[in-house]
Image 1 (cartoon, rainbow, N blue to C red):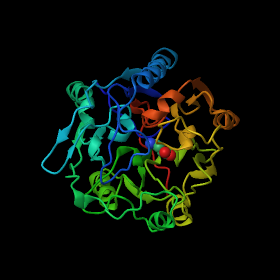
Image 2 (image 1 turned 90 degrees about the vertical axis):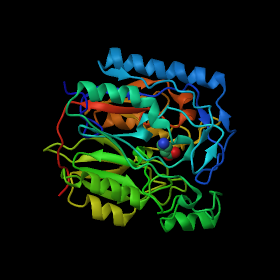
Image 3 (image 1 turned 180 degrees about the vertical axis):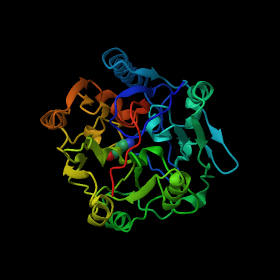
Image 4 (image 1 turned 135 degrees about the vertical axis):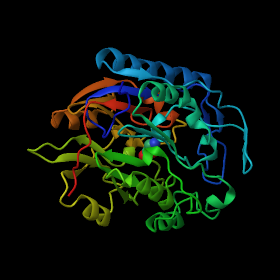
Amino acid sequence: MKIVNSHNEWDPLEEIILGVPDFWCTPQKEPGYLPTSRTGKQSDEYIHKAALQIDNLERVLRFQCNVTVRRPDKIDFTQPVRTPFFSIEHQHGASCPRDTLLVIGNEIIESTMSSRARYFESMAYRTILNDYFEKDEDMLWTMAPKPTMSENMYNSDFPFDTNCQERKDWIQNYKYVINEAEPCFDAAEVLRLGKDLIVQQSMTANRKGIDWLRRHVKSRGYRVHEVHFPGDLNPVHIDASLVPLVPPTNERKGILVNPPDRPITKEDKDRIFTGSSWEILDAPFPNSMVVPESCESSAWLSINLLMVGPDKAIVEETEIPTINFLESLGIKCIRVPYRDSYRFGGSIHCQTSDVRRIGECHNYFP
Ligand code: ABU
């Protein structure tokens, strides 16, 4: 039985993993992360509110979209961790399978992660992965090399103040809080466009991690492209920076959107996309640039949506400019309330990881 098969972000969706907000904690300060809100376990009120919205999304996927939905184990991530290299008082949570699991065709890669609080996060998906492994004899299950996350993996002089010139200089020069000591990447830095994987070098993926991925998939004909959005002073995950909305067809190019206040570099755009089947348009601005209290993501969660087919998307209901834009492109929008979930690491794309879509791996690049 074929279960794992997903090559892009838009083919008709059949199976997905949807995160859980239970036991979710804002990580404490660590070498690679400075919290901007209260650390520790999220309030029961916020967990409850998010759970209602995420459970509603599950019903929409199951009953309106006919998609099989799997949920991770509810592990108590409020517990401390001690490894040979570090210790922390509590962990993070399993709300965002997109950050942890990278699905490339018939393979699921547990990514290295980059934050100590997320070291054991993929364990929440082990029941599901083991089940897939038993039922789908073609499924490949890989764990990328686990970094030590010791002090020397991080730049201790990284300027955490997002308003200072020094921070801008670092990001302009493609220098981030993680250094090149060990390969490291969060899965959500990878945008899958068939045979081409676009990966953001960032606070959560270094060049060595991108190179690990490049070497890992090369023999199967994949190409891995490194990309940057230097206007983003906190570059964390590509799925609110470069998002496919319309897939290419024989008649027209596909459309990717990119926030105009953090454009892809001209060098990256020319090098990667010239002659491809894609055009990159400005994303419409979010409905509001204000995110819910204790949400550590940007307002560009407005484009962190889930395509359930080439002409159908699930979108947060208040993100009206995005919805209007999608509908003008002929994409039908299923609107769901999701803002209460924004404080759990992202929106609908972050909090899902598509496992099976009907379709094959195509080449959209020269
Ligand atoms: N995890 C996606 C968040 C991206 C952003 O804050 O823009």
